[in-house]
Image (cartoon, rainbow, N blue to C red):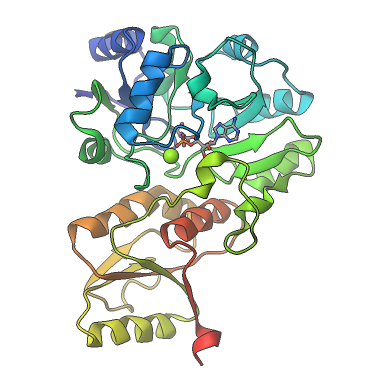
Length: 349
Ligand code: TXA
Ligand code: MG
């Protein structure tokens, strides 16, 4: 695979990028960095190319892909209509971690991209390598996260290699990604736009620009019986091999939970923050960031979740975070990693 400096200012200086773009034109799959996570790209207009994405990831075919563009005029070629709210948001957040779900123009894309829906999710990534690659390919690029379906999304080229080596044509290594969780998926076809997946652009940021935004009721978690509107949100996801429990309570309570499992002879893991890393004792303690800066938690979250698989732990306990700002995306991914399993201090006392 190719290593490209993520500060690339002059893509012409990177023959690797030209090579990667050529592979995309030849309907091959290439992984590349974005500001959120690594994506696995292919020509979004070609059934043959898009099929290779689903095969490499082991992804269910009813889960549509996000299409990545580098110029706003590409959107006009792909979208049947562009609502006013979408225009405001594009101006504010593109390039950036916001995917807009709009009505798709018939025949503009492979139907495998949209999984038969009449809408398509489109975004313009902020990463210079991603933008350069898309521009050089001259194509709209379908790109889901470049992980095996069900695993945490990749934030390092190494993660892509762990999951997909031998199954894809190439990886462009641009170092660590930035935000660390995926883009916000926003349906702008409804009167009041709906967040289908919380992500890099927060609900608060969106509402500052366009007023009221709703959260898809299907995101609320277990039991409610509502189906998430983003097909991908219904699958188990982001899960380490060992079961994850979210700890709703004090650090002392978390320690009691860990100790109880250690006494049974289990190898325990803990996801903690810098603020608690000196206090919590477990066999494997992973620091996912600083509680005082949730952006750092988002940035390290997937690498933290992945780190346990190499350590052979039996059970993982994780701190939880306030559901505001980027915390909404963090908690959405943690709940999926944990299959919504919580241990609550108030229940145990
Ligand atoms: O940050 C990101 O968005 C990354 C990077 C690579 O750009 N990509 C990404 O793609 O996360 P993926 O395929 O892993 O997730 C796409 C999500 C899924 O939950 C999918 O169901 C939803 O977006 N989605 C895509 N098109 C949709 C549509 N037309 N309607 C509703 N949900 C859609
Ligand atoms: Mg994904």
